[in-house]
Image (cartoon, rainbow, N blue to C red):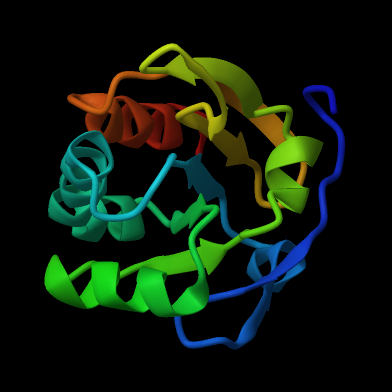
Length: 152
């Protein structure tokens, strides 16, 4: 996947409804991958996006979060932290692999497969405009708001 490429996928959201990236043509889309719902870093990032959601929306952007969690776990996460945007479930990491955010690491000396915290910005035509890889949770939502404002 290269900058300028059109991208399409469909995944269930936190309610189990199918959501396709093409549904949002006409608006820029911020798609952020996070490792696991309701973990410290992911919660910090999700809540920063929540706190800037109205500004992202005012800038015309659609915000989508995606992790390897099930729709049920995504729903609990969204409800617990009052997340006003759509969370997508990718338990098989199919879409995560397409975006090359599945990485091998180790935890307590054992190998693990994890999702690298990364964000992708799409233009109004559904083409990849920018990618932000291996981001830190703190301050990333503000960085994305600036990117949306700069690209619109």
